[in-house]
Length: 102
Ligand code: FES
Image 1 (spheres, helix red, strand yellow):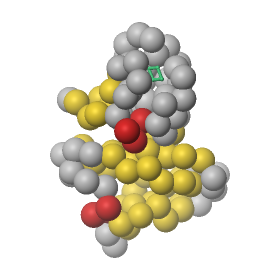
Image 2 (cartoon, rainbow, N blue to C red):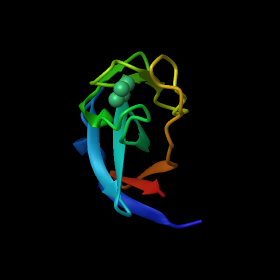
Image 3 (cartoon, rainbow, N blue to C red):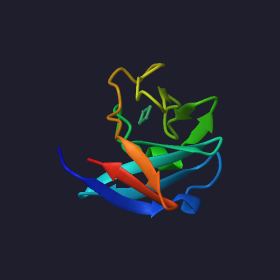
């Protein structure tokens, strides 16, 4: 398993918003859900929209293109047209920095 990779400052992820970062060249979307940060692959599994441009609602991310929903914590695809789950990344916060494991 690879190590922890510094992604950004915790304060860079807006409350109830998203931030696109790159980890080992992969686009990763960070989510701040009520002060807790989560990470999934950034690209929607339906047609590759950037989920960082989506909308957080009740612990889910709504894709900006066709409005499919994913569970932010598990990456599970919840509604059509999304049927393939998102990759989720282990994440920790250390000294105010968000670190992601890829
Ligand atoms: S690209 Fe995300 S639902 Fe179609």
